[in-house]
Every structure is written in C-alpha cells, then in structure tokens.
Amino acid sequence: MLLFTLLGGVTQPSMAQTACPVGTLVGSATCGPDAAPVDQVPSRPTSYVRYDGYGAIAYSPVSHVSFLNGASNGMGQEAVIEQAMTRCRAEYGGDCVILHTWENACANTGSVIVNGQKQVFAVEARSERATARKVREECSRRNPNWDYCKVGAQPVCAKGWGGYVSH
View (tube, rainbow, N blue to C red):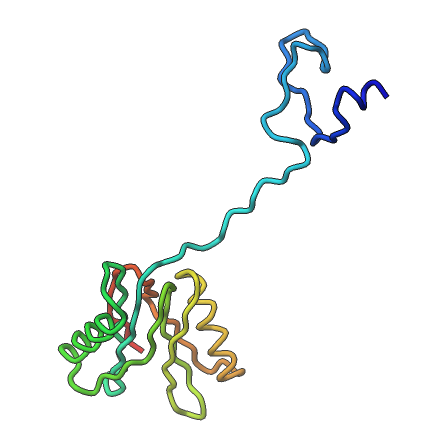
C-alpha cells in the first residue's frame, strides 16, 4: 500500500537499470535507467524513397525506342510530357507517342512477344529496383510462357533524369 501511494497510483513503463558504476549492484540508488523504456519497439525504416516530380515516356513505334524523362525542378506534368516528346521527335522523327506518365514514382519500360507481336509497355513503382520486378510480372501476365521478355535498361524516377531505351 505504501509503494502504491508513493507511485501515486500511476503505472510507469518498465525501465531497466544498466547504467551502474563498476562494482555497484543493479537497483542501487547510484544506477541510472536506460535511455528508452524496455517495452518500446523502435520504428521500422521505410524501404523506399519518395521522388517528388513528374515523368513521361515518349515511344517511337517505328524505331522501337523509348525516351524516359523525369523532372523535379518545378516543371509541371505538361512540360515534362512536352520535353519527352521533343527529344523523341528530334531523335526519331514524328512517330513518337506518349507511352506512360507518372507522378512521385519511378518508371521503366518492358517488351514481350505475344502471339508473334512485340508489345511495349510501361510500369511504375516506388523504387528503380521495384520497376524491374514489375516489368517481369507484366511480362508473365501478358505471356505466361515467357517466350521473350526485355526489361528496360534505364529505369527513371521523377527526379530529373532522361535517357533512351531500345526495345
């Protein structure tokens, strides 16, 4: 009862006493508590980075080349799309089309043979590495036999990068 009264009737998280001077018994008045309560679990770190910005993939069906463009320097989505199209047209002519756009993510391209025809597609994910996994999943979905699956060599995140990928 005396102990309950001294604590004021409030339960406290359990604390271990490991900060004791050499030769002092644990529980002694000269020992200090741990920095954190024993029953608290540290937070789990996130496994991805958020890439703020926009991206666009312009694709040339004739040359089978994609231009991936990402930007985080304050460019709006329309400007990123226009830049991707301009670069694609400058390199491969007027047959360029927008294959995919995204925001705050990463993207990649892939291609797979379905019924004798090459299908080019785009995926997006939270990380560059995850885009490769998603491309393989999409290949498997489109062609379970995996006759041919190509993962784009350069995934791009909405952080200001651009490059060409051949399919």
